[in-house]
Image (cartoon, rainbow, N blue to C red):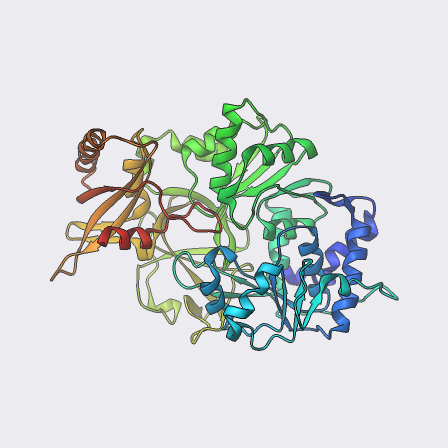
Length: 542
C-alpha cells in the first residue's frame, strides 16, 4: 500500500493543520513576520473557507496563486485545499509572456493575485478566459474583482473538509521552464501525503521545530508536521536579491532548526557568515537543492553550523521530489578524492519507496520499459524513477505522458528525469548533467558536470559551462567552454588563463575548440543556481 493511502484518515491535506490546532492550539504556526498560533491559523483558514465557498469555489476548481509568499498565501492555500480545490503554483520569474503561454493550457477557474499580477489580465486576456472570479490581495481596486478582505467571513460552524481519495487531483505545480517551456505537473492526493511522510521518516522532522522558509512549497509541507514557520526576509521569487545579513538574523533571532534553500542561498549565507564571523548554532538540518552543490559551497557553510548539524543535498524535480539524498559528511569525504571531478557529482541514495534505473540513452520517446535496456553499475545512462512521489502525467500537453515510460509489471509510469548518471556499487547515484546538454564530439561524448569539474578546479574560475557548436556539413559538435571568472581579468591575464586551461584540457583528453569569457552566466529564476546553457550556446553562436 502506498504511503499516502496509509494516511487516508487525513484524506484532505488541510486536516494536518486542523489536527495541529486541536492537539497543539497554542503552538506557533508562524513566528515571523507575525506570530500566529495554530488555533488562530486554523481560524483564519475557516474564515477564508467560508468566503470562498460563498463564491462557489468547490472541488476540482483550479485556483491560480500569484501571491507573495507569507502567512496569507499559506492560509489561502489550505482554505482552497479544504474545499477540494486545486492550487496552481507557477514561478513568476519565468516572465509574463512565458507564464501566459503556460497558463493558457490549463484553464484556471479562480485567480488570487497581488495588484501587479492582475495586470497580466490586460496584456494576456486569453490566459484567463475561463476565470470565474478574480481576487485581489492588495489595496488597489480593480473592477469586477473581489477584495481579499471581503472573503474573510466568520464561519457559523467549523467547516468540514471535503473528502479526498488517494487519486484525486490536488495541486498543479509548473516546472521552472529552465530546460524548455514550463509544463503543468499534476499532483494527486496520495503524492503530497507521501512527500510529507518522507519528510517525517527520512529526514526526521518533528513538531515544535522551527523552519526558516526560503522556498515556500517545502515550508507548506513541513507546517503540516507541526513546524513553526519563519518567513525569511528575502524576495523568494527572486532569490538573487537576498541580503544575507537579514536571513542570518531571521535564523538566529528565532532559533530556526531547519532550512531548505537553493545552493545560491547557501553560498551567499556562507560567504557572508565567514566574513562577518557569524554562526548559526540553532540549525540542525539544512537541505539544499535545485542545482549541484560545490565542495567550497558546502564546506564553507558547514563552518557556520554546530558539529552535529547536517546538510542534505536531495535530488529531484518538480515531477519527482525527492528522489535521492546524501549528507555533507559523506559528500565531503568523497570530495577528498581529486578524481571525483571526472566521476560526476554524487547525489546519494534513493529515498525509501522509490525505484531508480539507469537506462541506455535515447533521445526519442520510449513506450515500454521493455523497449530499452537497463545499464550495469558504472555505466553512464539516463536516470528514470518510479514511486509514490513520482507524477504520472502533465496537463495541457498533447501527450500527457511525455517523458514517461510505461511499466507493464506495475501498470505505473517511470519518469524520465532528463538527466544522465550512473550507479556505483554502493547503490549511490552520480549525476553527469542534462541529457540535452551533452556534447557529441568526433572524439566522443562530453558530459557537462565531469567536463566542467576539470576547469572549475582552477582558482581563477568561478564556474564553467560546456556548450556544443554544430560544425557545418558535420553531424558532430565542437566543444566550447564558457568561463565565469572569480574577478575581472585583464586581457593578458585571460590569455594566461586560457593557456593553463588548455593544459588541463589536454591532460584530461577533453577536445576543446575554444574558451570564451562571460561576466555573468544566465541562471534559472527559481533557484538562481542552474546554468542556462542553452542561452549561453545562443550567445556563443552569435
